[in-house]
Image (tube, rainbow, N blue to C red):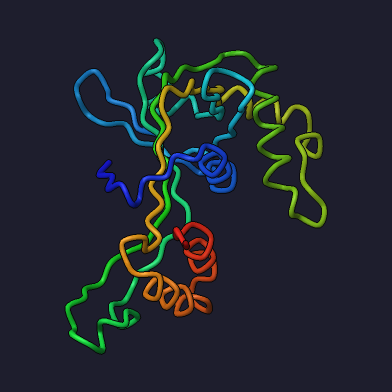
Length: 210
């Protein structure tokens, strides 16, 4: 990933917070024939396992990734958070000299690690229960696996397998107008308050105000 120093973000608590909040990750493996296998999977982050933590999720046994994981494989995982188009009209220079161009703000975390499948039903049930509990928490009446018939759940479990990713490296890129002046950054944040409040808050939070 292209990583200018002013966009580099290596504060692990912020990276972990992003991975937990934006759980749907892009998981990339290279097949033996050199082609890429790309999937989009909800993952949970466990800080207590491994040096940098472990990601856990599940895949369908019908997924080509299932066969690729007959042995552990190296994988690349991308978590994508808030993003926003940035108009040059929001910069003070637009009125002075017009030497400004559009750009895009975004926040991402890239993870490299060893991926393997875990063919163990109790382990799989634990992964599913935790993911469900996390993402159902905002529902008025959270759904849980026990709400569905036992035989139906057993049938569904036969079709999937758990995976885990032992994290070997973790880097963040938080592009939130740090290459602009403080005035420009705050003008961008103000312009986004109605259309993209999340990015507006990210600029206010992560722009290096002095």
